[in-house]
Length: 413
Image 1 (cartoon, rainbow, N blue to C red):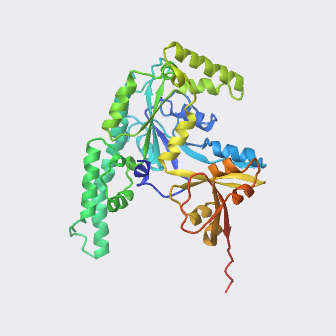
Image 2 (image 1 turned 90 degrees about the vertical axis):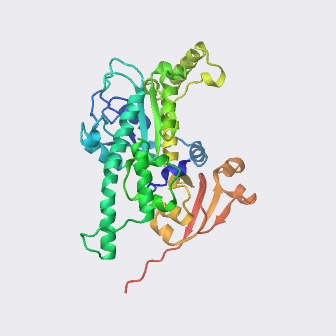
Image 3 (image 1 turned 135 degrees about the horizontal axis):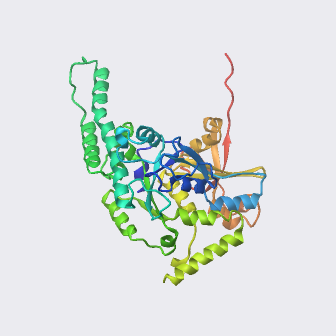
């Protein structure tokens, strides 16, 4: 289903996720936590983030850590996910209320959406509508996004007719008929948006319709991951009166991935910084609390959700990593799923794509199993697990690569 959601997006390797939600639901706090820094002024004040704050979040990756520990090079460059913290949205934003117009243009610039919903009560954190009701909040946001898309959609017919007139050299006063694919794509989008359902959740589009819709710039074609911000207590006991209702609402609006978490818990954990012992004690205390509340076995384990959120964002954008390893550097490179070897090589340098000859590849899992502690491919070559791939090879997540290329600069005439 993930490829389905990202099919309307740009084919690029540096895609970004944006946090969307009402003011004061924890967007800036969570962006800071994800980036492991505190540069978005996470003040409890509506519209305190007007300029979208862009953070680079290191993608948690056990394979990469293993390779870095094996080679121990002076330079280690992990993969990152770009995350944009966007100003809070309020009802009426599609008509420009609050920071409406700025908000909607910021959201148009990201490739996927983390839809952050507040499901905690706290007197010291103002709610923009004076009471906590995640379902109303979900309705407000989805409605604003769909309203903005309806506005965009209303202009699409005029633009398409103008394009047909120019292409066929017809007079401006004439009313040319629209193509069948255009009409069906338009009708499907219109029906979805009128029902407050994001366009990307629909399974019913033909490839030719997707090609058209991709150029319309609709916000709801972006993949969405729903992040539910709970109180620490509810997060520990893994329950909230709101969770079943939220799950039901999301199912009725096209479905999507739901990640329950607690900014309060994550901030308390992050406050220990590098003190690993204190972190362990805090997590043990939380797990003990969960057991007292009746949770058993692995269900009682309490752990950070930050890595899961970063991985879910990356997966929703259909991004994956391949690695280059050597004594000077171990590095993770980000590519889209389905990228062929020459284009993957081009991420390192355009010359590598232009003069691509072949790729020498092994799977990270094979390397971990067979290398016998050596920072080299010798053992894999012996076992026949180090292979050569040509121009049509589709890169797999976690490939370790060396690219062979040959580029000669063209002679000056």
